[in-house]
Amino acid sequence: MILAASAGGLHWGDILFTLFSFLFIIAVIVGIVLLFSTSKKKGKRLERVEAKLDKLLAEKEK
Image 1 (cartoon, one colour):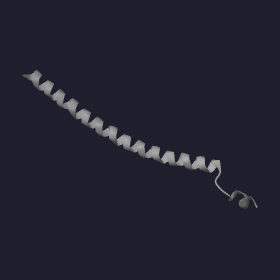
Image 2 (cartoon, one colour):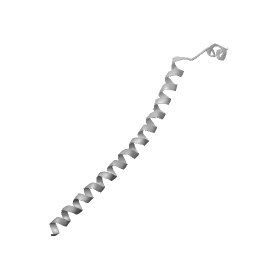
Image 3 (tube, one colour):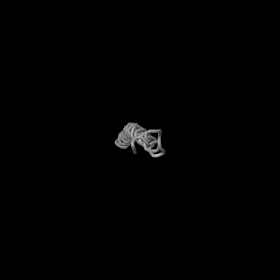
Image 4 (tube, helix red, strand yellow):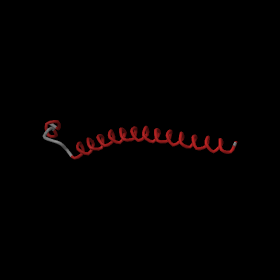
């Protein structure tokens, strides 16, 4: 009889669980995208610093 009493509709707990699960999945996806994005930016920044350092070392040797 308990099953028949609770089959009538959604409960607040179900709604909150679904909302938090959905937000968690979105947060994981956004986190992965941000991780790759910052990694790519860091690589480009490192290349620029290395180029500047090479230029400074070449000027110092002259």
